[in-house]
Image (cartoon, rainbow, N blue to C red; front, top):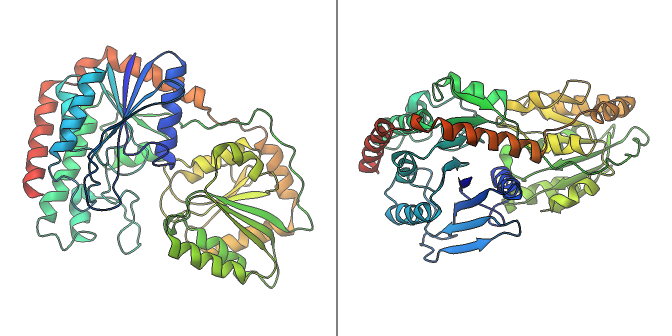
Length: 436
């Protein structure tokens, strides 16, 4: 099968969740003998156009087309991007795909998606985050408050983009455009029940969302983890170090229990895109008298099992709703229980008190309470570790097989993408471009 994957970034340009999931899927499909092309974007650090188109071939035989251009603004996502549209049309024609899988829409013009539907090529859409509903991606307002949802664009216009004189029309049209995209898709995929439920409740997906968990790499043999020593925990945070991921909550929790130290060590491993935020964390870390803190920075996935070798629990303290959490599954795959914020899909990822523990979102005090409980009864860690050994996360191979089966079903039902859907997308796109 000739497959085209669309994504906003692709490794090594981006190494966050969607990029890694796309890379694993592309490699998995190629190993199964499918012809795979990834069409992605290049980003300029400045407001200038990158003029050169890059073509690459991965070791597994995946063709990667990195289109030139300049990153769009989240505030003005639908400005006409004729150069991007032309580049995508050229790549599309060269690939002549049997199915197109939209992993992430950011950076592509609406006309790119319209083209796929107009050509009557089956479109599969993955809802890996909230971009289709939320212009700012994370359901977090610009002032840091959580957002229940776009409310047809009205919430966007009245809060985050209140200074936009065309906001009411712009964000209503944006919501309508992405509803139309999902309506035109042959298949819509969500990584968790939470995400599927969210988009259905917001009226985006019309009851047509399949839940397929993302796949994780499972070590060939799980290590025998050392037991906790002296009731002091060895903790880890794995992931991008940014405010919305709530890393500072871990430091605040440890600071609040300094008089009764609960943590022997804390590993912070992941990219650090916000130097000011990371420096603040480092400053707090220097004041923790009883906890050794190590900032690892970026790491290779092949290092993860070794990094967690001396870890009693991984903490996932997100402030915004997580749509899946690769971190939880990777920790479980390495035999390590987790402590998670009760927000988004994180509750789906653990069995409370068995494979992990949860705390009130954005509450360092409640996180401290959980950590104190584990430190005072380290047998909880031992029991959880035994339970985690019986957890078998969905693997990359399982994910690839499930998606490939979806492609086959989509091509059989190809007539679901018809001219009327393309016409509706074209009408909405033109209206949006006029506002931008």
